Length: 211
Image (cartoon, rainbow, N blue to C red; front, side):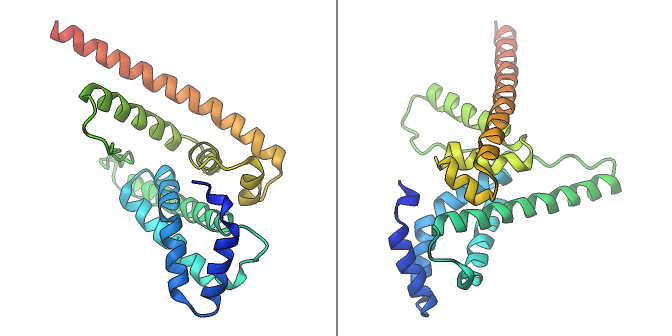
């Protein structure tokens, strides 16, 4: 799906919405609800929080639609809103977690890693398991990234956005985008390698017990 390639169609829907046609905005929601949810899930780490963040993103976009400049891409504008919503949610979550931990030393850390369902359950069970484990490892690695890197990594490697578009979303120079993606990629690779090693060690240990 070429998300950024439907600019003209989006602008027509935005204009119709500004003229009072609420159904036009519903069409924009249907068109972009999946990529916005995917962004939110990758950043937040749970289905419930991702749904809440996606809903808030569309609500904020609707309320701020009059401020949208027609020369820009609607998706880029919406994506920017969603990233900011997720980052604000993460900040609030960190504050609440800190207060919760401070008030009770017995509080256990919340598990933010949701199971990722694979749509095709007709595949070989071993393949399903490995694909699921691979998705979990990648998601866990993304969750460990600093918040300022999460959005650009998802934009680049999940949504496939160009560096130039990410620079507009983040409102930073193109060179900074490339530098941050390079740094984030190194962190991701390190986390993924460590996670794979731990997975292989646990698997080997389990086999040794069986044999």
